[in-house]
Image (tube, rainbow, N blue to C red; front, top):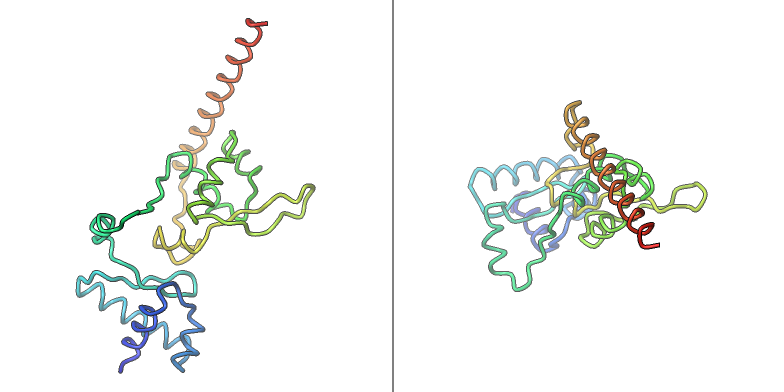
Length: 198
């Protein structure tokens, strides 16, 4: 049996991601040979228009369904749990992905508004997790992305995230300023209403 076939069988049976080193030890080959087998298996799936894909998550490999299968899979699943990422949640996820490890306080300084709900949703969706605590007063929790984040967005690691150009950064800053101004205006309006009632 070829290395590719053995690798395929292991990944299929394990279901989740398997570290390259563990695969090398189990298959009794070098990590480099695991990479070669993975590259060959990945190419065979893509060339044959198969419904399975081999993805790399950091130093691990996993089998997953091809994107073209998602809609059909959702129809078959009795309770599909596809996280719905609102603009606020996506923006918070982007900040965490690019700035990790990062505290809620740092996220809120960048966004200009409270981010408790967005961070909690991302943790619930399994896209973000606690990465320890910052060595500062209060020891705030540090957040970072998870393996599920890499899997969901099909990237090998956070170093593979696309670089933001100047125009994108300017757009983000404008959006944050707009949200901050709206939040401040709403707060002033509420304070005025309280004064009138008094």
